[in-house]
Picture 1: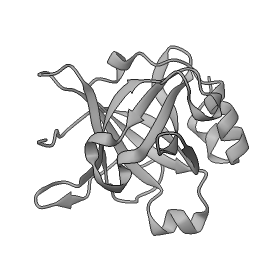
Picture 2: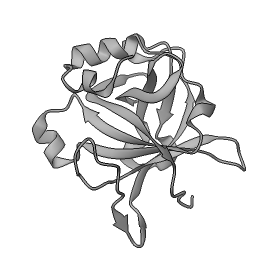
Picture 3: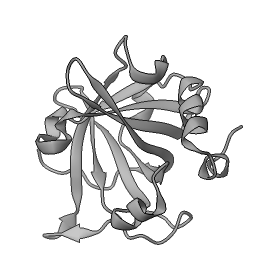
Picture 4: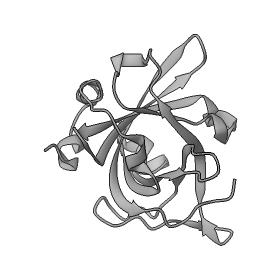
Length: 177
């Protein structure tokens, strides 16, 4: 079984190969769960300007059946500390809302299994960002690996940004749409 620590020292080429070798994800296995995110592949200076850890959520909308989610800004307390949401206006600080879909038939870098996080619903600058997401270990959704690219229609621009998701438990907060 491959674990979190195996990914912390990988370079971008190794992370890309891990994405290609990744496993399918049963989307229903993600319903109403929260994951601690760990940024991978970025230079340290970029991490210092943004964050190393974050939380990514998955919520099955009971009215539509759509799997959607959002990112949560968290206190930067290290890789082993549980995620503690930063609060803004009395609620967890959420951003980057998305829907989760099947992978398109054509993806950058030959990723063939997994799901796609599509930030179109969030609007703004991030609406063109797409994150293919794979299961690291076959049949297990406790550890997921993702990568970001920008979809400009005919052109897909790769980014150096990878991330690891470790299941933390059920979601604690669902923001209003």
